[in-house]
Image (cartoon, rainbow, N blue to C red; front, side, top):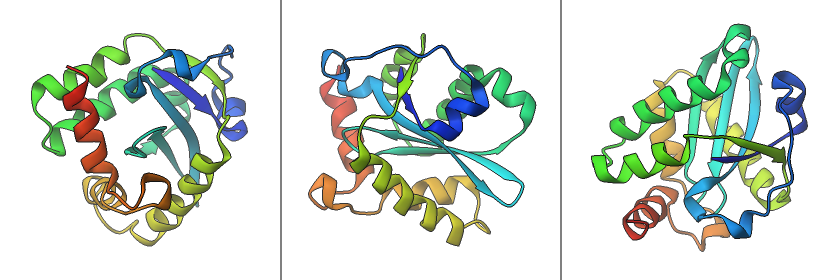
Length: 161
């Protein structure tokens, strides 16, 4: 999994950064990632570069940032199952998470979309994490030609067999 991190998250987890040419990787492997803070709550937002399908990971504590890769694997696995993806599709995502590469964020358009998502997350904080993930992934964005990220991600998973 190639994670392009915002400065806030880089400062928090202090990863070893590399230069990644995202065009050389599968679309299923490339994500932008940022840390959102609502009061004292730390929330990780991971967004696929092509489909804008996002994983919102709630309740992060300081100790979670020391073992962030395992936290991401477990949370993404749960969210994919709750979202109703078939096993053969979510296994493709999990296989991309066998190793992680980190670099600085490179696409301001994706970051702008993630800022829109942050506003929606802030409005829905009284809902369950699954409901928030569901609502974020069923929004429409100009970047995806007004198609829902959930449908685009599902199509991407089907095509990557």
